[in-house]
Image (cartoon, rainbow, N blue to C red; front, side, top):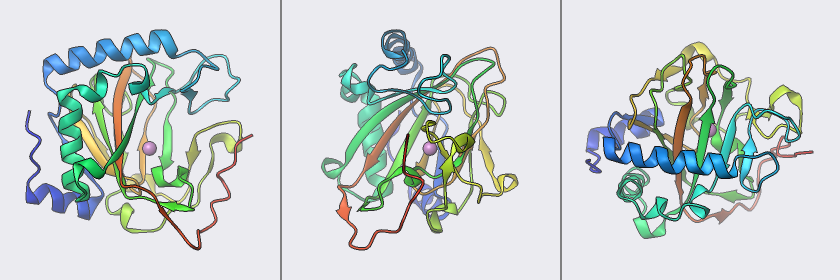
Length: 246
Ligand code: NI
């Protein structure tokens, strides 16, 4: 599997804020990643467990709508020792123009369960971040299943990373819900990025993105690696009043 990113792809990333990598993980890696993923969800995806979140539902809800395990590498230390991880870090280093050793990282595993997985409304990942600290970064989103428009593939707003962090609010205007969304994106301008298993998309911290609900009979499992620069303190941070949870 190639981890070399050519000049054209780098320019595309700078211009659009995202790129598609149609084959980032090979078939053996996908089989292995699915095994790790399913084991983690079987063991740790229970409401109230540390590192487990339902992005779209209330923390006290009974059925998770959009279950997610943050930092799965805590429970599966083999993840960051894999060839897939090394490839992703190299790719992140190229896109961000930051040395591999200077990149911080964490993972998350996001599942859209069959038939009832909730949509992930338009948001910018930077909308979740404390404005007192500035970082450059990106996410590499590898799908372990077919990610289609019907199963909840990602949609991006091309060039949206060149603007500001948009105003966000809590999903359902309920500050018990962890997930944030913005009303400032015209969804019709979004570009859908369907992928076969092993395919990936890379997006900048500021690129607006969306994923639909999973309307298929299959789960839509995605393994995300986030790479970023060390934080730099911002002397006069902009207000992000939505960063408050009940
Ligand atoms: Ni996101």
